[in-house]
Length: 358
DNA sequence: CGTCTTTGACCAGCGC
DNA sequence: GCGCTGGTCAAAGACG
Ligand SMILES: [Zn+2]
Image (tube, rainbow, N blue to C red; front, side, top):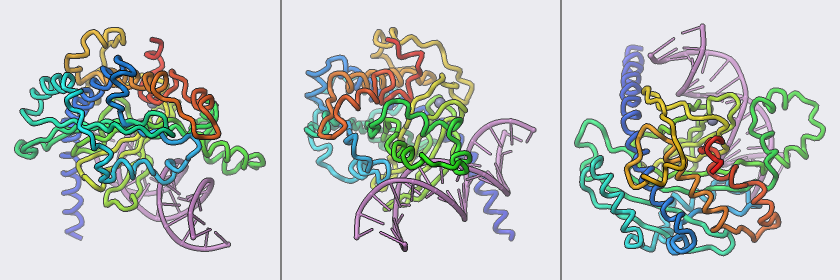
């Protein structure tokens, strides 16, 4: 009895403490995220030359292969200790970017060696899979009161398994397709619908972030709606949904079983609204995408997630337009492109509509 | 009191 | 058909 109360009190304290840490750390986390994506956007500017040489390891799943949605096959790849995934050290290619990273990150994370590793392998079937991992190792993470926050980030395009046009909103749209109504409905054409729905997955984009906190702040408000134990992992996976009632974006957050410090955040869907700003009252300032490139070498402001959104957007455009040509499947590239037009694309979930008319 | 988290139950897809 | 797994729902509770 007494102990339970005590326990609860302790948990409460921990929670409060965690929140403080979260707010502090997530900002740092996004900072490094910005930095990484910065490099990505730079590579995007160079298009094929740089992009292919770097061959960002974006994992593109076959559109017809829905495995990912159920079994997270790509995650096993990602999180598995497949060193061959990052076997090729191309830090020299990125030296410029690293320099920027270094310069800007030093102010935040003291002086720690960087290591950038990129996979150069292209799998012919999946177009241009690419994934980027930056690693910034802290020497004494816990020396200060705040533990080490996000220090390494990887961006992975997880899935474009949609094989139906963007009418897909029927699947994810909570307003139109509440399970209650669906469950009670006579559901005669349901089977067909279900079949169709099955693959109607919004494009998903994942981040691997080295962080002590699970839920990274990204400017949107999320409501947790589920948590499940992850197979072969001691860490659970949390499911979040955007709190905007008209928004269908979801995200999953889990920790890598290989490296407990790595947080894998998967975004799915696209926001139909703007960010709400960071919770600590950091209201977002105006953001002009055109300005983005002009001072992209400067450390992005922590209070403006649109920076990384725009970066993601650029990355996405790069993927869809010049780098990716998914085939190897029955759906064919046309289906993919129709599903993921540049505007709706892989990063659409993070890039607000208002920003996409570039 | 509104918002958010927790958590057990439920459902669908998939492999055997 | 059965069991496993990922994903979601929703009631209850916690929190500010
Ligand atoms: Zn949203």
